[in-house]
Image 1 (cartoon, each protein chain N blue to C red):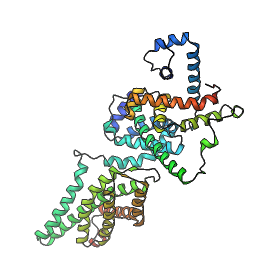
Image 2: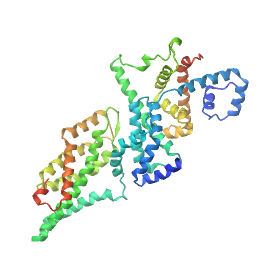
Image 3: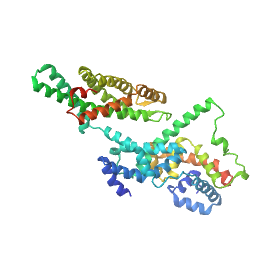
Image 4: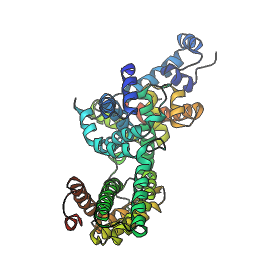
Length: 191
Length: 248
């Protein structure tokens, strides 16, 4: 697929919109999955998908074939998602300062005190996983999603986010620690 | 070997442990570390259950439909000095100036004067048509930009507004001098908004974006520019119409 993409990228660079359409059609599902896992929000994920392709189109000349095209798209999507998560967090902080009665999924699903009798594997576990992911910082979540779901190496993630391998590694470690703290009671293992 | 750290187990899980053989050996010998690794695996495997909303098989085509028009605008804006469309408007503007200058310095008689006048109007129409189309792109980009998304990078819009401003002044003055007040008025409104965009920061806040959108909307500018652009294009197609009909 990457070899085919190479031809499409070259044609898209020279202004062939059909070639870029091919790339959009090939990568939209993957970018949506990544974006949703990073933002946890369907509408935000849709925004990320569109903005990723718009930015990719504008920056096609900057794409170097050293990394795969999908990794390059992930980089754009990750950075935009990161901005979006941080912006959303700031907005929510402002909102929480304004009122203490905000509906919050973390209040509905108390991750730290699950109560074994309430646990029904399936939807509820999925909700708890989502809530646990929501507890990660933007940087932790981004690094973790790219490593865990997308299979990028720590070095690739460090390069994509401009944070370097060491900082990326620590973001992933912190993310895993937080996830274990939140989810071990849910999956039945008490440390 | 000491017990395996959590960090080493995480790296092992993701296949990035630098000392994999030693860790494997230790896990084979140490029940505590094996239990720790199983616990880690259980949590990380559970994370995979986080649902992602399904998208249809045609999702890629749907995304394309949504972005295609915006790509068109971006493509036109991928200017570089090697591309003719950067300097074509400026060159056209210079031609307009040259014709206007010629109008005051040369006094051709009879048929020559009429012919020159027709050419002048034709050039002005084409130039203004292109100018309006490019202006419409900037206005549409900002009008359609989602507010409530925090800081928005409008570097491209600012740059384009800056480039359009000089041409706009020239066309407005030309339209004014030829008595085309309809064009002159729209270009005057457009110029005010282009100035605002050009002087905005590269990243605008929600409030700043909404203020720009309000200015565009309150003047009905996008609509005016669109209508005027259509009329200009119609005039380009029908250049043989009488002079009075060419007034916009």
